[in-house]
Image (cartoon, rainbow, N blue to C red; front, side, top):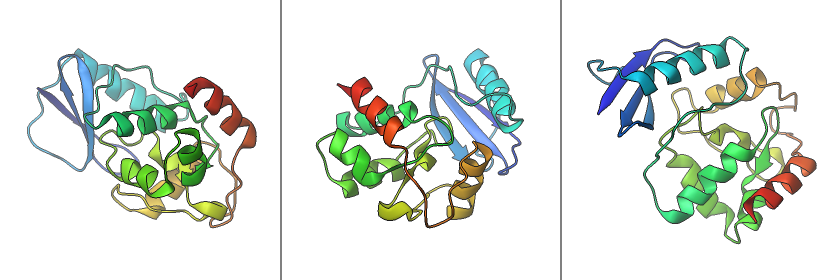
Amino acid sequence: MGRLTLDSPLGPLTLTSADGAIVALDWGHQGDDAPDSVLEEAARQLADYFAGRRTGFDLPLAPRGTAFRQKVWAAMQAIPPGTVLTYGDVARMLDSAPRAVGGACGANPIPVIIPCHRIVGSGGAPGGYSGFGGLETKDWLLRHEGFRGKPGKAVTGAKARDRLTLQLL
């Protein structure tokens, strides 16, 4: 298992890898570094993301979770930067319930790279965010990606929702 801590505008982030894939991104410093090539590439891509030179990630990911959570995390990765969907939008696409989607968001082991911050509550309410800084961090990430909705009055992307539905079929 590899580990690499990097500085970010959100504070230190620690990446963890196993078997050639990213398995976790944790807030703060999580122990001694033992970098490998996948972690070094993830650190480069995250640096580019935070510098505004990248909007998505091309990394091998292996988040550990139930089949349902895997589906939710895949849906999150299909939401374009600068766009938000509601927990209900994603739940309808997966034939599930908004609370179940919220639970999968809160259990996301690779935040930022798997963009759980792009899912908000009904009517655009921010919902929650389990990362360091909570909703302030979620708001920062959305604004960094170009989302220009008003806090608490987010406008979801119907076109993005339709594209995502097609991708999940």
